[in-house]
Image 1 (cartoon, helix red, strand yellow):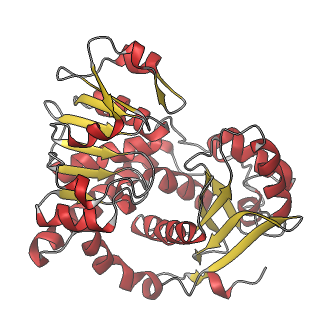
Image 2 (tube, helix red, strand yellow):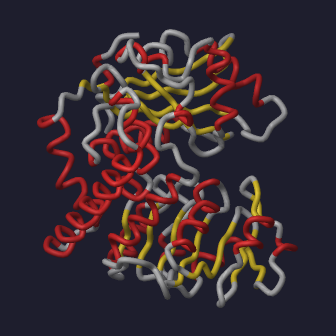
Length: 375
């Protein structure tokens, strides 16, 4: 399926630490997050890298798509040593043309540890393209870098999918209490929505009147819900969140967390995939048959990548206000175009995306596929 990709195994003393998968290059650069998971598989990183190419393409960005993956427990005692050795072993790769950033399990501090092992700045490959520009050391120093950026894109996607100017009166449930899920709470609340439930890997909290901001600020930290902070809310197992009565269900947890059986009981009219492929294939089919509008990760979780790659491609020269206006416009245009094709051709929005964009990726843009690059 991904025969054009370049798959690089990162090893230290013969031990496999993870992978870097290059799906595409553009202007000699490729970007993607670095996932940290105990049970990480090469095929997962490959799919993520291909998805990144699509995310960047729909925003018209001058950088190709890639992905990193470290096989480790992100919260384990040895994580810093593993990340340092991953960086050491990736010399000649990450300091050449590839930039990796945050993803599931990978905080800014953990990414910094990889680059410490690498002995290079995160933006060193970009600096070579813009030798006269003064670029920050890390992505979070770029102009326009905001808190809860991915969540902001999720909120934009929801506005585009529902055709609304605000979300007043809209009831939202959020699967996930990590950076995207927690951030989505604040972004949706700012837009007038009522967030009626959230979940982490173990528990869910729900309240028909809406969760309180102060409870979320205090009670959700580091991807975990402290149920003691949600007095007056219902506390149930995590999975129950997916069948909450709501208008919009945001998936902001891990990949492939919702299967077809669970999808049969989802009550939301809109699902926004803030996580990378949160739905399994049978869930996608089930929801399509039920006419539930599902906006996939390619659009819904593209805003952070769009922001950093826009600035990397410009040498950090775009005005932040203009930058975020363009990102919002790109999300709206892609969502609305795919909704139209989906309704007309009676296909899912994900398939509409592929129909619109895939034939154009190689023909209209000067992408160089990963397999053609030598390291």
